[in-house]
Image 1 (tube, rainbow, N blue to C red):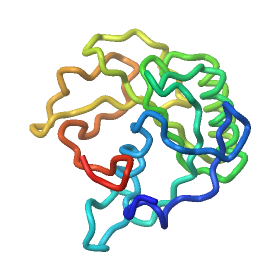
Image 2 (cartoon, helix red, strand yellow):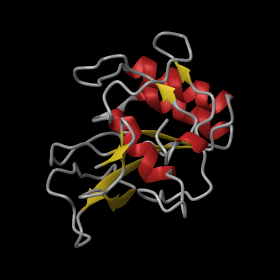
Image 3 (tube, rainbow, N blue to C red):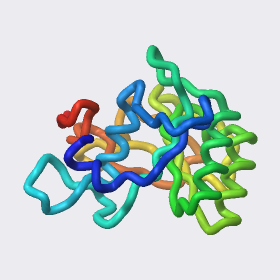
Image 4 (cartoon, one colour):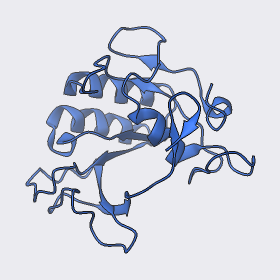
Length: 176
C-alpha cells in the first residue's frame, strides 16, 4: 500500500511459508524496493533509480527480530524469481557473496538471462569470499564517493554504489 511502491509490485512469493504473504517483517525490503523502483514524477516522496522497473517481491525470511535467512531459502527465492521472469535479483545479506548454495542459484538465474546482486556486508572488514562470476557483489560509498566505513571490502567486490543517507520508502507508507 506504500504510495511510491503500490503500482510497482507484481504478485510475489513467500518461499519460507510457501504462500503469497510478502509482508515485510523487518523493513529492509521496503527500503531496498524504494531505492530501486519507487515511482518517479508523482510529486510524492522519492524516486527509484529504475524508473520503469517493477518489483517481484520474494520473501525469504519470517524472522521479525533479525531479518536473517537461510542460504537454502535465499537460493529458493532466486530460483523462484528466475522461473517467474526476474531480470535482476537482489540479496542484501552479509556473507551471501561467498555462499556456494547462493552461487548455484545465481548460475540458474544467469542461465535464464538474469543477474544477481548481493551486498558486500556491513562489518567494515576485508572479507575473503570466493569471487563467483555469477554474483555481483556491491560495496557502499558515502557522499564523497569513498567506501562507507561500515561497508565490507575485498577482492570479491565488483562495484560500489551510494549507501549512506539514502532517503527511501519505509513500511507504513513513509520515508526515511
